[in-house]
Amino acid sequence: MAELVLMRKAYGEALVQLGRDNPDVVVLSADVSNSDFSYMFQEAFPDRFFNVGIAEQCLIDVAVGLAYCGKIPFANSFAFLLATRALEMVRTHCCYGEANVKLMAAYGGVSDSFDGPTHHAITDIAIMRSLPNMTVVVPSDTVAVAKLLPQVAAWRGAVYFRMNRNEVPVLFDHAYEPKIGKAVDVRPGKDVTLIGTGLMLSRCLEAAEILADEGIDARVMEMHTIKPLDADAVVKAARGTGALVTAEEHNIIGGLGAAVTEVISDAYPVPVKRVGIPDRFAETGPYAALLDRYGMAVADVVKAARAAVAAKR
Amino acid sequence: MHYHSESLIRDLSAKAQSFRIQVLKMVYNAQSGHLGGAFSVAEILTALFFHHLRLDPSRPDWPERDRLLFSKGHACAMLYTAMAYRGFFPVEELMTFRQLDSRLQGHPDRVKLPGVEMCAGPLGQGVAIGVGMALALRMDQSKPSAVTAPSARASRARVYVVLGDGEINAGVVWEGAMAAAKYRLGNLTAILDYNGVQQTGAVADVMPIEPVAAKWEAFGWHVQEIDGHNMGEILNALDRADEVHARPSIIIAHTTKGKGVSFMEYDNRWHGMPPNKEQYERALAELEEGLRTWQNWS
Figure 1 (cartoon, rainbow over the protein chains, first blue to last red):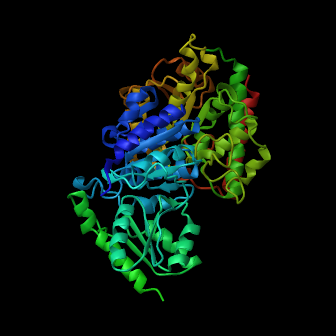
Figure 2: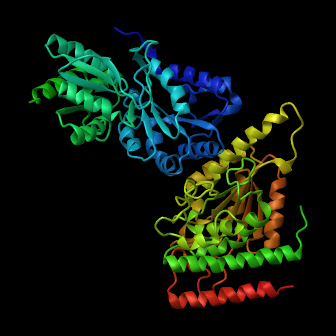
Figure 3: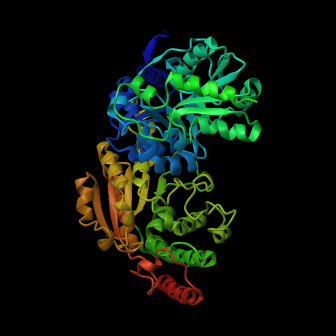
């Protein structure tokens, strides 16, 4: 069993390192800095940290103003608030106006499990992915957070960086060198490719073990960047294994699964099965139990893989 | 406070009136656009672009420039006109307003048109974006003062936000207003174009904003109230606002929607309606008559 590490703490540490490396980085909060751990940046660089209060629309607009004057603002709030309450500001200024704002989306998916569906973010990837000029990145573990965050800072334009609230399995080591926009091969296989993002990557790896016992040789690919999607990698996986499964902590509508099927239906149609929340709100409860109950169990990935393989001609 | 000569006031007032004529032609030509709120803000924008702001039209990205955030984006025909005559782009381009391939989009696009500091149209956002800019400018300006004396005001870029009265219905305006006061942004000045009319009726009926001066005072802002068509009062108020220390400042400029055209004044129907030929000719005649009054004023 992989070691478990708190993703938001890894984020706080990565943010402080970024602050040391780049004096233009500033951090904004809508008064949840002790939830998302951006308080660590505040402690290290109090003059470069701004708490605008419980005002997510203002959070984005203030970040936009800072960006237009050459700063690299990291605006922190809960994923659902950035993607819904602050959405018009994001669309008009970060996307249309090309403000170089980094949206740090805490509590992605159902990871804020006990706070319930008001605090779950299950539509954010779909929303953000549909905006021109937006880049969407979902790290799978704490190593990915540390490795991707400096790239987010250096990336030209707005980025939606969606993180997990909880302790997550550490999947990668220092040899891991992700690049925004490029898929990562995690496990070879020839019968089906499991494409996972965020926490669901770890569940894809668990599923691959089970499938191996059944004689299905599953390849596993990490898709940390959902937009721009690594279409070449997706098509190659389709050609190589003839069937795909996507797995994400998100509504099955509009997220990674949709992005993959959009590519595949044009370029190289093969069976694609999507694992995610079946277009409904979840409920309050323990995190792992919610994932299991709402369509994102390891067994759901296994089942989808079997179905995808069976659908191959 | 600086002395402003009568000739300066006359010249700027005449310029503002001539810009109304230009705007009328643009909206008539496009058969689309917003006249009422453009006419009400003519003197304010003229005072800013032709006297108060530190700008270099040949370098729209000059880091030391003052930032003008035109938050009431629908009235952009007047913004474009002031920018063109100030030298940001050729005056001839004004007649491409709202046409295909134009840089003069229906609402301002900062990417297409250098010199535009923010995209606007979805209302209410100039104040909060101005807060971000004022914070950034202050961070940069404070760098040398850590080891030397603070530099003179004359070398410091400031942020100016022009907002409409209807748009302060939006909650994010007040979120930004609180943040500006929290961060003691003495380098931020807002000018409220209080023309009293919004899209579907009088501001007082649609969503009463009074007591508006007391609201901004209660939010921690320095408040002045002026006649927003009186060039001398505008120039004085802008100077005074620059001198306010450690808190943001707002100039509540009482104006008339549709100013300068008798049948458009105070009438919400002229918020977003283009004139027909007969209306255009009547409006043009009235505006030209007003311009002659300024030109003959001594």
